[in-house]
Image 1 (tube, protein in one colour):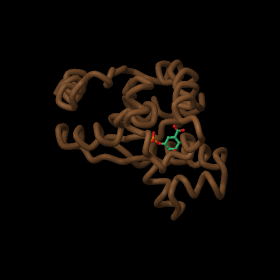
Image 2: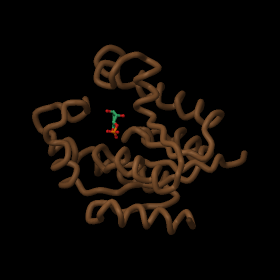
Image 3: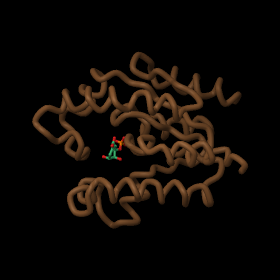
Length: 172
Ligand code: S3P
């Protein structure tokens, strides 16, 4: 199975996958796709509606289906993924087939600062978002690491520094 020369961004909610992805798309002149946006478009619903109406398990299946589809369709692109996508073992293999996987690593404090007023992440809408972030991040961190080809620590870096790091890794 050959790799598709895509750059894949994984990491926790609020780590900056979308923003880094857009900046990277300008810097490397590659188009960007976002799995959440593809799913929302295909389903005609927001992520919050999908979680409420169909449930999280159905959403997770949509994510795997989305990656499978991209393996046939995407080449030379930047692919930003939903924060929970690497939780399924099966998706690790699919992501590796799709391209080079970059984990944008972030601290729980940064996530909380960025998302404390967010209403679009159903998993963080309970009465203790800080505790939920900590619980999920602890559980997920080893899986992100296991899934990644490269880890970029983004909490203390400017966007310019992050983009430079990508350029070095990608040799451009
Ligand atoms: C999720 C992350 C979200 C979105 C959904 C579930 C998660 O994407 O897929 O709300 O389980 O971490 P972002 O990482 O882009 O916020």
